[in-house]
Length: 298
Image 1 (tube, rainbow, N blue to C red):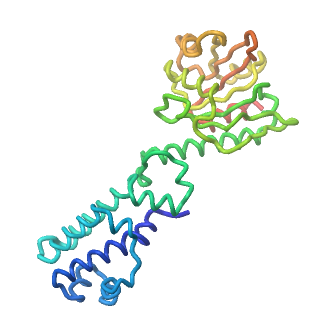
Image 2 (cartoon, rainbow, N blue to C red; image 1 turned 30 degrees about the vertical axis):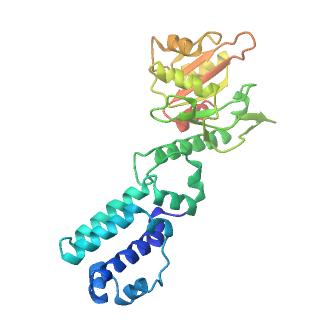
Image 3 (spheres, rainbow, N blue to C red; image 1 turned 60 degrees about the vertical axis):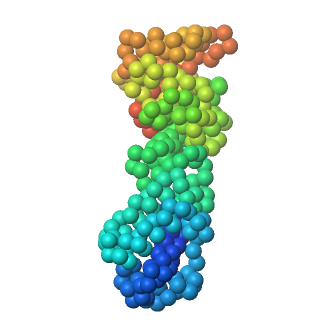
């Protein structure tokens, strides 16, 4: 695990201090004065001045870095900029470069798992997409573990296979829904999970969930299990609200019609059609909650 703060310490700070120390020396400041302004030792200033500290060429060539170094060197040398202001300006630049910029790229290179994510992200943003997607994937993992450890779950897996899915808060397409890649299958009485949760790998169960959400359901997660009248009765006895939809009609329209009377329905089912296996869809606030529904029935 590599933190972006480590990249800042190892790459940005030596580069920034070296450039700033050099600019301050060029403006006639002594090593002692530079050391005091930067809060470092005179020997460190000497190392910077003689090129004994390795710097990052990409950062050194970045115009924003060089512009800030020049501005701070002028201000610190003249006394127009305080040490506190210089620190704040440097911190602002660091945060800017961490948000999908050069420090984010260096962080990705130092910690390759981050390369799985497309687009830009701010690793510090508590409401950011990166944190949200990882929490959804984690929720699906927990739900899958519950299912794997639930006696009798394998017998509930439809012939087409099952999938446990969870959507991002503002999901609009299947790419916004995390699921098990492929399907969870019954292999000799055991639920077999083919891989780690990913986004955009479930078309059918994700589509049912998205259709339910579009119809007003608060559900964020769904799991498909085989349809059985006794199972449906057990779910209703446990307090779940059920509704049937037509599997041969347009999915969004059919689900919307099923939820029209009560968007809080948390079990959707269809009893089959030509070439269509009857299936129940359990809905819930997250993947763990949906998996718990199955566990509590066993």
